[in-house]
Length: 182
Image (cartoon, rainbow, N blue to C red; front, side, top):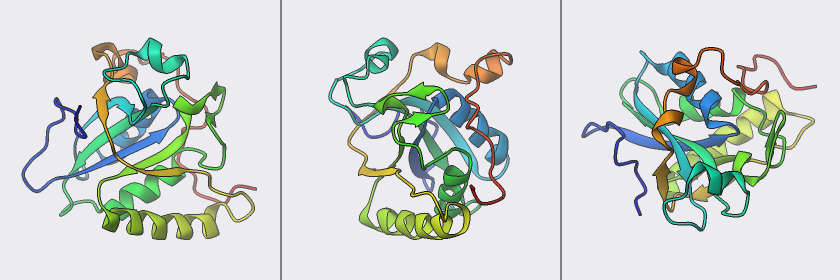
């Protein structure tokens, strides 16, 4: 059991962020598209926290393991800040829907951030408060914030899925919000 993907490229000064925003394919695609040349070092889709050791996609889809479909990101903090990545996370999906993104329903599709330190949790809370006031003033953000306990890579065919399958399913709630939710 590990908190960091064993296949995630991580340089000595990099930091790790783990987020869940519904379907991990679209989450990975959005982060790579936006930060691919702006500080993102690598990312892997997988399963965060939960109660099963080494879960499979089939296990997680049953909704009984409490894992979240998640994206683990290594980034260079001298190029992009944790604050920028967390703000993007809140704006690239709908953090006001409980255990769902678009048509994807279940706890595995919850909005969640898995932090590594108390300092990160404090910074995440501050970003959430800012985004709540500006972009979701009439809708409560329900994103869970949990200490990262464990992370398992998803099966190989899930990695870079939308790059390998350009016509593949993309969650309709994955787009960058630029104005408040009404």
